[in-house]
Image (tube, rainbow, N blue to C red; front, side):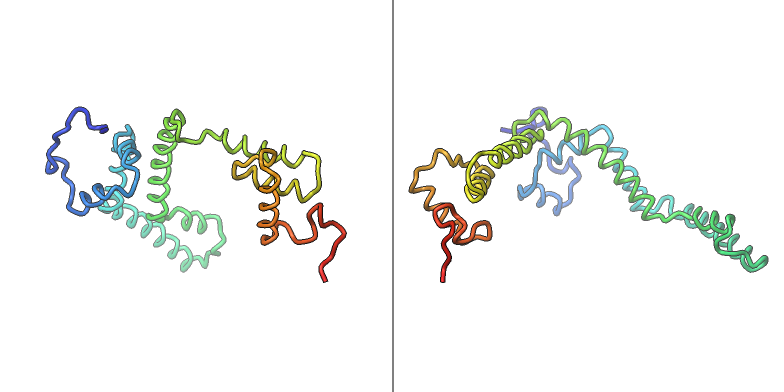
Length: 203
């Protein structure tokens, strides 16, 4: 089964991939489908363009010149007029300077998250993707287990088994005894707390 329907015989050299990139794609240790969805997304090209601008430093000089000009003005005011660092104009000149890494980090983050949110929305149609119902059902089952009549220790057992998909009521008496014996070894239940041992103490 393949998603490559239009170009089943695509030439590797046409993809302009490095040997390292080809090795990564071949090892199969990640979700190839998700990578494909990311690449073909309508906003992926813009994300890559902004990524290239950041990596190649196309706007670095402009940002640095702007920051240098603002800082020079700030230092001049400080020296000439002994301006207070907390002065409105001094603070404005300081805050007006741009941290290049923080700026591009925010831009790239926002663009990538927007793409991933769109992909996530599309995946809600998949049977293998959680729509939140499973968690809601589990929480309801755990709440129901707590509401059942019985000793506190039995409620704990029911709740624990519900969380792993086991129905306590369908277990045989021998299976219940075995589970209780196992739970003795955990912090969840302590010897002497089960219904049959209530009131007894080890010496």
